[in-house]
Length: 77
Image (cartoon, rainbow, N blue to C red; front, side, top):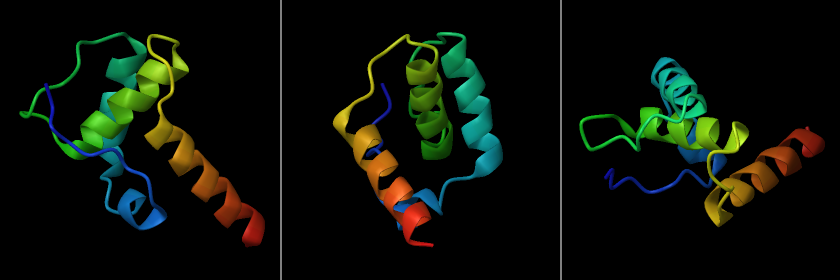
């Protein structure tokens, strides 16, 4: 089981590696097992979003918070 903290801020989101996140996202969409510590936090973040988007798991509070701050930022700019 990965021991990463969820991404909840825009500053934290900016540190995520896009390529690794996309790899994790596609694996999550395919219902791949939760990644271990051999994967990066970026991969894990993508995997979580892929799992939610494909309805393999429910969105959690951290994902809801990130969505809230992202939308607020978009509306302000």
